[in-house]
Image (cartoon, rainbow, N blue to C red; front, side, top):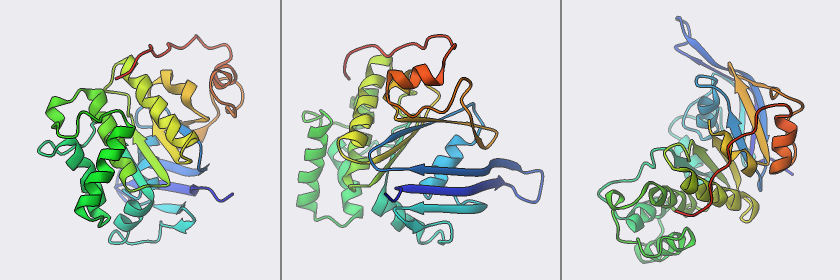
Length: 257
């Protein structure tokens, strides 16, 4: 099966030609529809750079990135927005909602970019907000929503374009443990129940139980986990294989948003 994302020999140098920084040093990675992949590693390891290149926000210095079978590294900055709009949904730590728009209008904005007629866009936005448990928040502004509710609006907006790929940068970092668990359950459902390829950058070890694979990046390279072989199973088995002999990890609390 063709990967939703295929990365080969990817490099990224910032300020090339001066005292620049090498962020990625030849990364290979495939992500398939129906799986949730975590990108983990210390600050400055290159994980957010990798996510941004896969999301067609940054350009690589060299190497190849294929999105849904399309080579994108050779495309101009003028053509990349069309690739993002067609194939990719984004969920950010800071939510990136427009403060002067209601929850429904924030979702409708993405549908408007896809030239969905206004009446249909409103119906579809309400449907998506229903799906993320916000049927009573259509007309609420971001300032009137909790952090978890804002993240749910952001997820609904990411899904508005019906993308094959969902990329998330630290989606639980600003949330308490109960809310973070609810958001991660939703992200897992996007992969397993809706067949999306979901890639999440995170520092949060509590989300490991939700991953099909955990990829560790250090100094711009994908490296072996600290204990044993790279995980290939889901849930608790991943934790056992990935951190044999390591201290036990804190679990998310129970509850919703």
